[in-house]
Image (cartoon, rainbow, N blue to C red; front, top):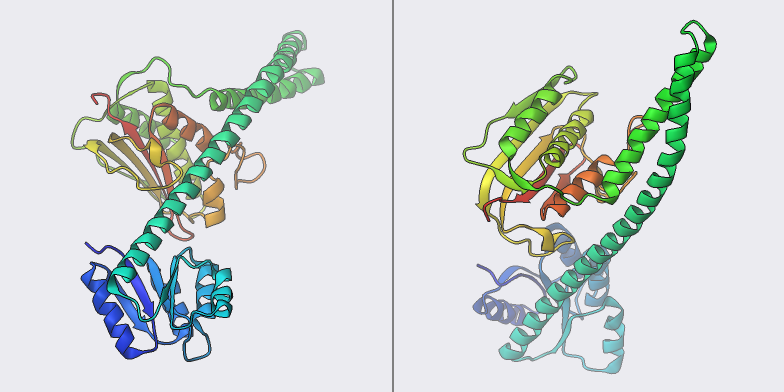
Length: 377
């Protein structure tokens, strides 16, 4: 297995061959040796190497400094500069591109290896640090929203109790033919809808898993599919094959049903206009590789039952995908959604020690995957 994929940008053929030979001897994969800066930029943007070894003085339209700046503008790739010039002016010129190392020609192979290894290690640590910071910010944001939601929900519930109670009294006292009866009925319906939203807020603010016991996820999925099939719009088909083995998770059965149903309903809603296929997959308990990095890496269960729900709908743009699990965020028209479904699903999955991931691209549909810890692990 390669130690890393490296792009070498060097216009002196003999030096380029020596660098390539040395890097490949260290176990790295040299993707290409390119002599011109503008060609290196196009290659890097297309192939996404792990590191770029860039000569500062290059023939062509772009020198190494300009090429590095163009690459760093679009990609978070470590760049090491190499040059025969050691004057202060040259060093100062490359500083704005945030280089990860600086090699002075001619350099020894040992120096090359140490510089490359250090740059790759530093880049990996910086990515992990950014992921951890992102996870911390997200956790703080969700905690603040949850606290606010809980307070608002409790206070609002008291007001709704009076509205719903008095509207019910009015409905009992006013004859059905009386216009007042119709008014009380509308007030009552609005109050009930508002109470449903309050329950969503409370579910979001306290998704802790209570009364956990071994739950067969296969049975949960069958029940959820029965509900979904009864309300499928024309043109939407269901693709589901029962799992090949047992799928026990230690969880609250009602909350697991809520997770499955919410994810399925979201997938169906995405295909309501143009039709498509709802694919539901449930994988039995199996060992999973720990996520290497990312905001949810620490929540990846080692042995998990995996529920995957995919649709063939229009998919989501990256900026929408990033906010999909934020509370109250929705792309549906006003009155057609609260924006709380995925936020609650994510809260439930996390409270059970699991992980929810979303994958989507415009025109390629969306896949939601919930990994839940096995009950017998």
